[in-house]
Image 1: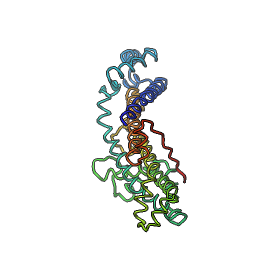
Image 2 (image 1 turned 60 degrees about the horizontal axis):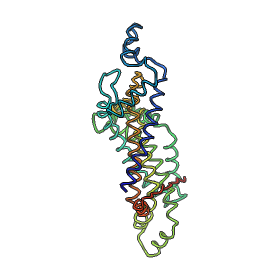
Image 3 (image 1 turned 30 degrees about the vertical axis):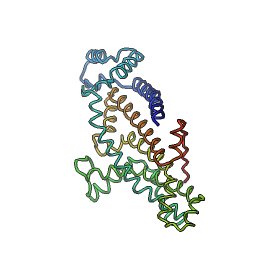
Image 4 (image 1 turned 90 degrees about the vertical axis):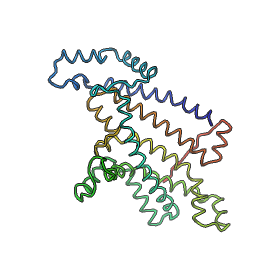
Length: 322
């Protein structure tokens, strides 16, 4: 197990290096002048040139890239914000917990609702329950989350006035962002759960359990769901990682001071170090989430534990059939 963890951590290094390289060069060639953004429209060309020289923006791109990697690898320095003149690592550390909370609340809601819907849909296959739940899931994976967020604000904040439209200063302020963020994950989890349970419920051991007179609840939760959980774990891990990195618009719409809004503000102000460091941070978090999901496989499936002990873990393929 320890050998596998070390191997996975080492495999994260080229992935993170690739992310850093791609994001750095994309931001470097993006149109816009950070000096003009910082100094404002009333600044002179001489002042802008002086600031570019101070920030190192006049150096060749490869020289800038080498300096960025040197500070990142040798010093662990993510740089300093052009606009706020503050260490980026500190700013990310202040904002990431909010993004992490929103992702956790959204995934809890998606799992608590999506898994039962998927199980019920599989057990009542082709019934009106199955048709209604899968239709809801299809809509959930199709609608853009920012459009759904605006619709929630229009209904529950503007028309009815039950919930605040922006901010998370009170518990009620979390409700609309969590719902808007979780709808796609909920729908995908429900569809995957249905497919996985349908694939498992026709196995011989399920028929044997029923033939022995086991209660249906025991058959479903002890035998059926336990053996169908690997694809569900896979989807939950992927959706959680995507939720962490995909809340840019949601946080901007609801004015949530998280990492997503921080990235939007940095992009709008051409604050390149903030953009690069935020994407790097999210890539590391996503890689860690993937590692945790792989380790959870071993916790729920004895076959995976045996592969870990042998030192040759195999990738488990999770196929989601609608």
